[in-house]
Length: 154
Image 1 (cartoon, rainbow, N blue to C red):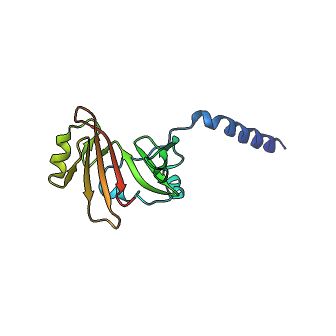
Image 2: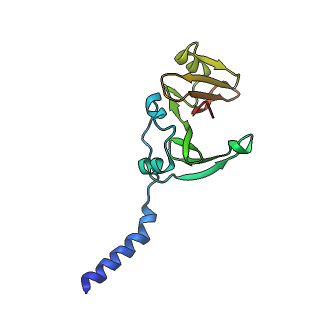
Image 3: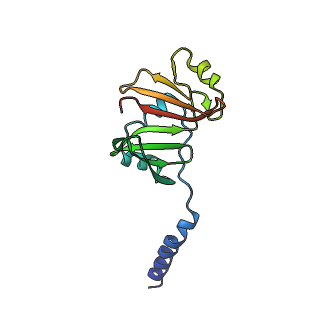
C-alpha cells in the first residue's frame, strides 16, 4: 500500500512541478536551403512531432481574408500555416545572410538572380519540386530586417 501512495504522490508532484521547469521548445539552427525547403509543406502534426509544441501561436492578417495565417513560433524560426500545412518560414539567417546584414550581402550572395523591389529582395530558388522564393525585407537603412522562405505559388 505504501508503494501505491508513493506512486500517487510522485505522479501528482511531477504533474504539478513539471510546468515550472518546462523549457522553451528548441528548433535546431537551420539555414541551408535544402534543410529549410524540407520544412515547407509539412503538416502541423509533423511540425509538432519534430519540434515539440511552439513557444507561441498567433494569427497574422493578410491583405485579403484568404491570406490569413496562423504562426507557430519557435526560438529561431516561425512557421506560417495555411489550413494544416506549412507554406512559409521566417528565419534569422539563410544562405549566410543574417538579419542586420547590409543589402549588399544579398546581392553578393545571389548575384544577378535577384528581383529588387526596393525594400524587398526576391530570390527564386531552383531545383525543388515546388516553386520557392526567398524574400529579404529591408529596413529604411538598407539592412535585412526579416528573411522568409515561401512557396511562391500561394
